[in-house]
Length: 226
Image (cartoon, rainbow, N blue to C red; front, side, top):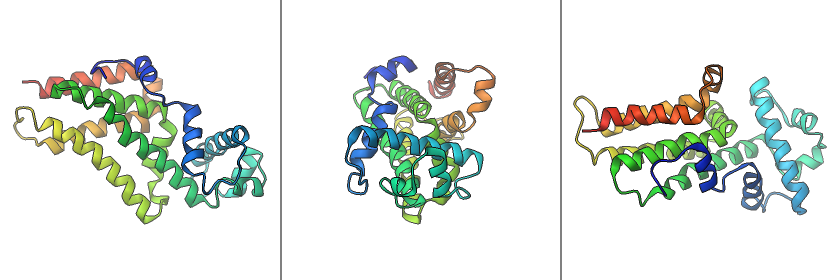
């Protein structure tokens, strides 16, 4: 894949969108989802997760319960149990989507050879995928404490995996005084976490995903270029 691309081009390059998120969840968790008619199952998964994000923002994930979810989606309790058995499963499924995207998207840019170009591609892709999946990334960032211990560990490992990818690329460049590849990578990661956690701030300033990505890349290249 090319190193330089905008949000629209990224969306064309990857099949990641709202429709196939529900298909991914349905196929991934087919063993626990008892509803076998695909079309209504996809529609109900969309209702369930959109309602979860809405309630989590309004009352908090800890405070919401499955009856709240039934009220928001229009599903009966029995209908809801056809997809999830508990809030824990719901949180695990959200974390799974974010982890899958986090681990798979960087593979698109393995063939970009120049380190700065590869880093630019990963930064842009990370910003753009978090834009497409903003509620999912926001949930994992803000509510990861509700995950079971094993799932919390997995979420941390996926974040550290991305940070290590950045650090490995930065290590190929001339060293910068007073900084390590790991610390520089952590700063980059924090930069695009700010994008999906504080969307209100950038929305108020009319900052588009492309404007933010361009600025992040300029900062990275300005600091790391020899």
